[in-house]
Length: 214
Image: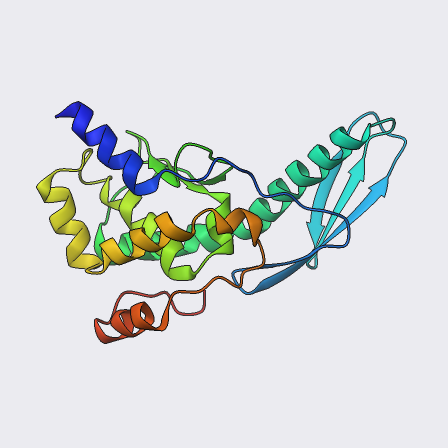
């Protein structure tokens, strides 16, 4: 049974193992927010980044070779955007939890995951993969609800799926979208990926939970 559970989990939320990269001058759309990547050289021994008013300013350490420069730009841009977007993700998670679970949550984090789209620890610390910020909101919310359901069920039992499907009846369609399109979250980090009209219509018909103002 344990082996079967692991296989199911990997089949459902196993992402393409590629991180999003960023370059100088790139404009990025994340959950309706716009960011511009600006890279500057410095005389410092370390690279840093900060985000202010939609500008992600990356200051690179001196004497970096080309490969290291690209690595620093992408890594620090991901971290800066994660910090800027985390309050919105935390608020969305809080509202879902209060509406459906009433669990005592631990920390919510945006992570550079390569092995899964999300995870929930025994202390209810929930990790969400950074790449999900660049896809449809319905997919981000699907992973959130998957992990929140684990605050009540630590496995993928019938009870787990009964609770999950009561909240998200189109669970399989959302996961199918993620399976078929997850790799595009890396190559098309522009916030333009959308559900098909068919799935959109079904969500609206079934009055799926959504968070206003997010």
